[in-house]
Amino acid sequence: MARPKLTIVVPVFNERRTLPLVLERVRALPVDKEILVIDNASTDGTREWLLQERSRLEQDGVRILLQPRNRGKGSSVRWGFREARGEYVVIQDADLEYRPEEILLLLRAAEEGRPVVYGSRLLEWPHHLPTPVNSLFMFGRVVINDIFRWLYRREVTDVATCYKLMRTDIAQSLPLRGTGFELDFELTAQLVKRGYPIHEVPISYHPRSIAEGKKLRVTDGLRAVWTLLRCWLQPTPTRGGRG
Image (cartoon, rainbow, N blue to C red):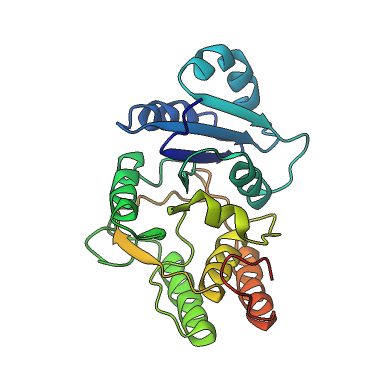
């Protein structure tokens, strides 16, 4: 079987309302791809829908992986990385806060020779964000980005973005252990410690409210800070090494 250009990893937990549209838009992307949907033991009908539609989805290049219990978004992303067969791998959330069509912007930059490309919601702020944006979101992102910059001496405008695209061999070489949302920060820290340059391209963003299903909480921000500190304290590995 020929290797696809891109693996799109879609971690899912309780996204029955938005997942069908996300998959429809991802499947429509004009690129040779595989799509990995990792359901994190959803309880809102998401898993039942995936099982019901499994044959049709698999015909369209969608592979469905089922967590036996809720192990966190980070565990689902790590599983997706291990299973990825594409030349590049990217993360796509299932909640429509990000536009799947903009994955092509990241892929284009990667094909120009950049091993790691992030889609930044803040690179051209406020032009790519709706108005008004949740002030807590903005404050949290700015604080965490500042902590990252201070610890790692690198400028990354959106450490927490979902849209992280990289060569699959790089993703599979990282010693990731995060199980929740803190994986975003661990992933960035491990890339920087190994000397990989992170190229950013501006993307749009349409955040949900907690009432609409947003799952991030203040405790996730605290875990993010701890993760950045933990990775910073680890010995600096060589590129390609597992540290």
